[in-house]
Length: 254
Image 1 (cartoon, rainbow, N blue to C red):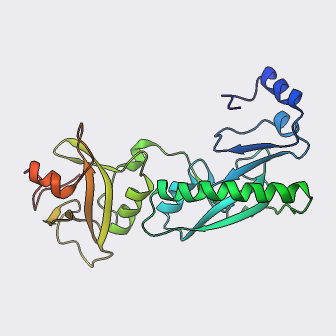
Image 2: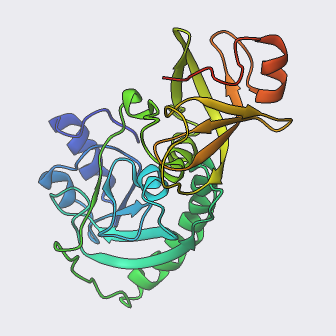
């Protein structure tokens, strides 16, 4: 069931009539009303894509990558009236790799959620799970992502921008502007993590090689490997540069 709202009496009655032992929620996006939380014998549990209380909210995977976290995971939690604030029943950690996009991490967490949920349900049925209160002091929030957040700020560091590009892949895709056109950046790598002083205005193309475009940032240097112009395919930068002579040393993204 994926009702757009759980506030209607008709929907609530449908759930009551099912007499569920348990309701499981994953990536639903809406808070469950107290009337719903009270229906199942064992309550409602949520499968959340982070180790709570870190990254409560709508976009834990993206914020994990944006923050440069080395670990993520799945939390099985007993739902209450708050936003991902309920007691933790079980956690299953997962390493975050330095090259992970949100899609990469999602795939691993999805598999972990399946195995972890089954294991947790067996223990829940046997009465072997002990709820653990979340710490409000260490809680962080992964708020819903707006497309405009994916606009690259070239004044940021090469490390931060590279994380942006990975975090917003496959949605909404990091983007920048070149000669009044919106360009989507799909893949990049760090060339220099930090520099004492930029040698050019951040966003300036410093060099071009067979792999991509080397671009100045507010701190460090980034190489753009794959990008997409409006109405065009996603292509390696080396291919795009052959067709677009405006992409040259000294040209600037904004």
